[in-house]
Image 1 (cartoon, one colour):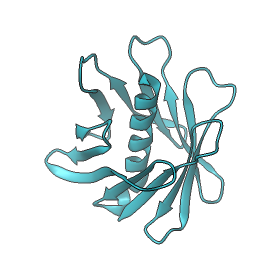
Image 2 (tube, rainbow, N blue to C red):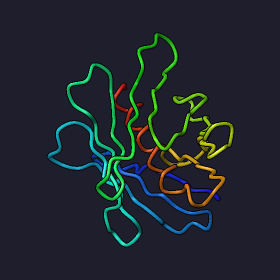
Image 3 (tube, rainbow, N blue to C red):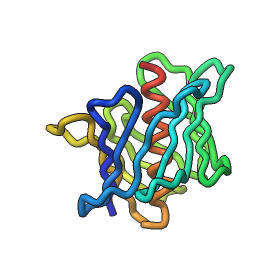
Image 4 (cartoon, rainbow, N blue to C red):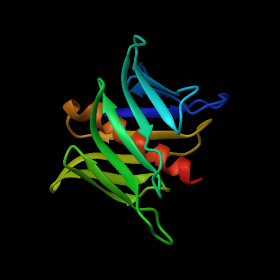
Amino acid sequence: MKLLIKQRVFSWTDSYDIYDEAGNQKYFVKAAFFAFGHQLQVYDGAGREIGRVKQKLLTLLPAFDIEIGGRVYGRIQKKFTFLKPKYEIDFNGWRVEGDFLGWDYDVYFGNIPVAHISKELFHWGDTYVIDIANPNDELMGMMLVIAIDAANCTED
């Protein structure tokens, strides 16, 4: 199954709409106003908040907690590197490999593929595709992608 993440082009803050393969909006994401650090709130199609990606303050390199339903499920933290971005991921027992800035990476649980993330070209605004192997991993996979994007944006 696939999810499309589209950045809203004319928005003052980080905002995304997330669609299923049929083009139906399933989720949307917006930055929290008056928050300390970078904080993104994730909502389902009915407008109920289901999760947050919150920047940890007072860290040397960017770090983000991933919350779902008010519970912290894990963290992503940028590692110190010179050329290529690398992240330490403590989330759901998953590991991530690939090109984070080029938006071409894979998520694994052990050796089992969980998701492939890629960027689609020739769209108005950035559009990313999450190809998820197991539909039960949809929410967790989407939250991880949003956290990685937040970490990339914080570096820029």
